Image (cartoon, rainbow, N blue to C red):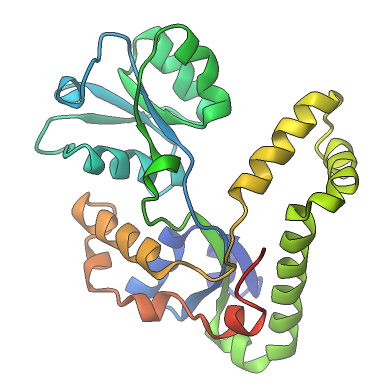
Length: 259
């Protein structure tokens, strides 16, 4: 996002917080495509935590940045449970990526965190409860998407159109079951995965994560802006208009539906 603001690159795959922050600061950045329109995290707690109320006064492990996907998912999960970190004295402790967050939970540094289902399996087997499974809640969310500055969007529409169509076609190719035997070996090569079974799991997760619609979800962006304002990530987010953050014109031209 910083490279886009500096004019070093024209487009980028970024989280909506970056676009919302840019627009709130007066920039003309806009999200034109969504490549992950939901969140699959589970709120996993220490075995001593039996219900939502038990999280009051406890420490919650989040990602390295308060504006990151895991951190937003954390406050969204807490909000779903009727909890507010400030009011309920829940400490949001930056603990890094998922392996680090899980280690902090098991080590007792934190009493809850959000992690993906494939990471949480072992913890659940050891008695760590899942208080919220966000994938099952269908909570409006925009995890990431293709963003562009409006100036190159106007000056180089053909370039932007080609990039968008290429990304759209790639999503459709990946989610097509008939292409699985092409996609999985490609993933094994490029991600350096040697175990075919593990590669198949990664493929299944990827297909699950990729959007049914390539358009950014307006309710998802709106809910993130609301959370950013409420939880002090950026108080100015409350004044940002969603129509200034997302533009659905091009994604609708590219077909809208990815599958």
